[in-house]
Amino acid sequence: METESTNTKLVVIGGSAGSLQVILEMLKKLNIEIEFPILLVLHRKAHSTNILPLLLQQFSAMEVIEIEDKTEIENNKLYIVPADYHLLFESKKLMSLDSSEKMNYSRPSIDVTFKSAAEIFGKNLVGVLLSGANADGVEGLAYIKKNGGKVWIQDPATAEVDYMPQHAVDRVEYDQIITPGNLADFINKL
Amino acid sequence: MLEPSIVKDEEIEYLIKDVYEMYGYDFSEYSRASFKRRVNRICLIDRFTSFAELRYTILNDPEYLKRFVEEITVNVTEMFRDPQFFRILRDKILPQLGTYPLIRVWVAGCSTGEEAYSMAILLKEANLYHKSLIYGTDLNPSVLETARAGVFPLQQMKLYSENYMLSGGKKDFSDYYTANYDSVRFDKSLQEKLILSTHNLVSDSSFNSFQLIICRNVLIYFDRGLQERVFRLFDNSLENLGFLALGAKETLRFSNLDKNYHQVEDQKIWKKLDHN
Image (cartoon, rainbow over all chains, first blue to last red):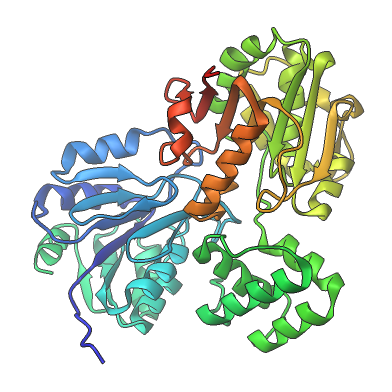
């Protein structure tokens, strides 16, 4: 059997209320040469405009791409799931969108993408859950752990809304507690 | 609750083969990630604890197959979804269609009909409805029954009414329906020009020619190869200078047909060029 590399192939970050500041903080300090893609699954309003990708691009040295159906994923790019769609992985290279029922009152649902990414990337995945006001993402984190990936959770004490990270800390076996100040450092070291 | 992973990847392939051989529904070129979620979801809601149980039921119960097809396909839709899209149809596209003596619109994969009804309202307000025909098709007979009834949940009307106004609607949206306890019935006149019929984009061919084809959030469930075949079906069904409208995150860009079409501003609407 071939030896499987444990190199990181994807970092997927889920967040809801209060997570945007953490992400902007992270973008400022991110190593511009990271060798994997970063995917953001953020709860957004259904008809939200394209302001978010533009905003993120202002803070990011990496190219920011809002995902369309069957987008091919490339290293060293920042991807964001569009409002009103779930995001699934077809393979390590190909993503598709799905407009089925909301999950945890959310579309995109963090759980849905965490689970799909865990199945495809296994131990090459890092899942990060940030500030938020519902429990979307908690089950997905557990699934990432079960599939051998790494689980990072924002320190609830540093979260604007601690419900989501607190639930995760209580229920999921995590690898790392991160803060808005050190998230980028941990990613840079992967 | 996250759906469990009851069915394995290779079992999905057996299932697709069985359903095709027994019933002729071909899901082999559906995007696997979504399809697998749907199969696991149906195991959860219909309480199958193993793949064998699901497979046995499908193979031995043709009645259950209907339910399977209904649940495996995504039937989430709303009226005036992406209001900006409907505003462009209203302001930019319908005036161009207005010059035709008969306007034929195909809503492909119409599910329970919300977009077909939205289209009827747009055509009415543009004073074009009297010379229009709207064809709504879906592979799934049961969702077409819902579309035919024209009865929708009352709780959706707040959202639909907001969407309608954002799309440039000037009337009182509630003028288009009669409310009951928890549902509303849309005005019969909105069905006069509506033709609902089963049609499978995977296996059925072109059945008419149209000036506008609307197919939104259907192609996301297909792989690239099938998407390309469906684009060709649409191309064969679209008159020169006709319009093809896709979902907010779908594109014609990767298709070989892209060169024969001109994108309308930055919208997900493409105009077929006159190239004869």
